[in-house]
Length: 262
Image 1 (tube, helix red, strand yellow):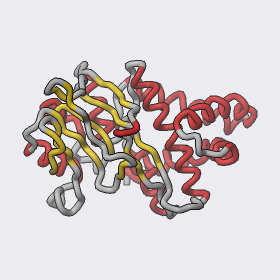
Image 2 (cartoon, rainbow, N blue to C red; image 1 turned 180 degrees about the vertical axis):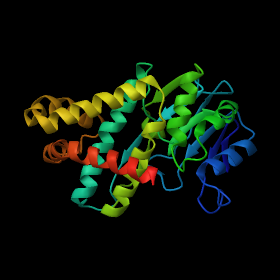
Image 3 (cartoon, rainbow, N blue to C red; image 1 turned 30 degrees about the vertical axis):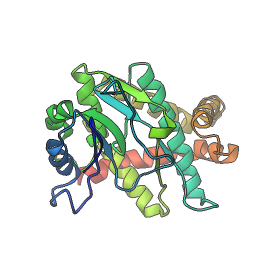
Image 4 (cartoon, rainbow, N blue to C red; image 1 turned 90 degrees about the vertical axis):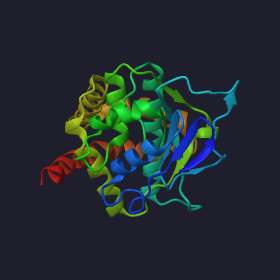
């Protein structure tokens, strides 16, 4: 743990070091329990910041006026010429991030990432029983559900100063493993906004599979989401993502559920 100022402690759980062999959620609980500040800033150990991420204080108070502050991420490749797999991930991530921002602004947050997230320490600890310790991942989404269910205040920041940079997977095996893990958590979600959003995405993509002409309606909407968040994504990459996404999503959903079951 590293204190960046009086009111916030940065929490960076490192697998195999902080988790005592019991997983990330255990590591988070232990590190957050040890923190002495009002807020904790959770980050993954592999994120980077284009600008040194820090919160400025005003009149002695930290400028976070919510119980949970969703911070944004940007996916960037370390290569000068990213591979097709990396470009597709970057485009997908841009759409996900913009959806995260738009829904949170409207008071119906459906996503957040534990790779870059600020929460009130006491509120996080109160939510720990809701994080499903028996499931290896999902500490962020289950935390979001818990905060919403308890009527706590949730906000989102688009500040570039606080935006973390994450890297795309460079191998297909790592990519599929992560996506299957994400999909395997879906049956545990109970929040109506998350379920509604998931249902809309699923139905829209099934319709596209059954009626490919639906692509003409879906693509302009999703391309706008992508470009709003990351102008570096090319038209061709976004279009290819849109064409393959329904099949990729269904494979991940079925594979994730099967993987979780067995």
